[in-house]
Image (cartoon, rainbow, N blue to C red):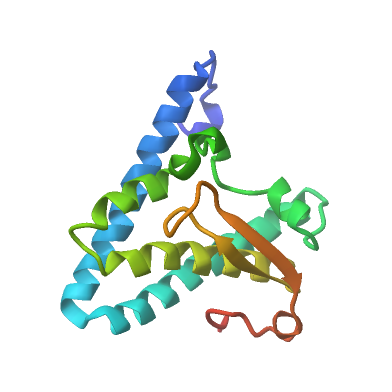
Length: 179
């Protein structure tokens, strides 16, 4: 029996839903850390940053290609941050702003590695910058993005600015190129 024939019924309490989403996010965050750790041991920090940047760029490009396609199928535009947020693929109900620095389940997990693996302080927020910048650049094809605050570095929230980019309009993305 395929998923097209399976009917999901019932309701789930929000507390359980948030907990389950955060468990899945924790697993992803751990995978990212261990991926970085193995690469750093094999190649050193600078080569690892290069590999991680390319990998996360490709993830962001693939992800935003799928979001653009979804938007077009739904008859939506791909011009604004609001257009992007209308088709976003993150389970945002698992990100709880009232929890401050721990609002993001990735950050909550990654900060636990900082004392034992101080080099990871550079690679944890690097993920956020590369994925968020790439997704908006590739989705809109004219906007770029700059993180102005990230809970992996300091503060109680992640803040960003979106802006028009002549480079993105030319197909030149901040962290890579689509080939």
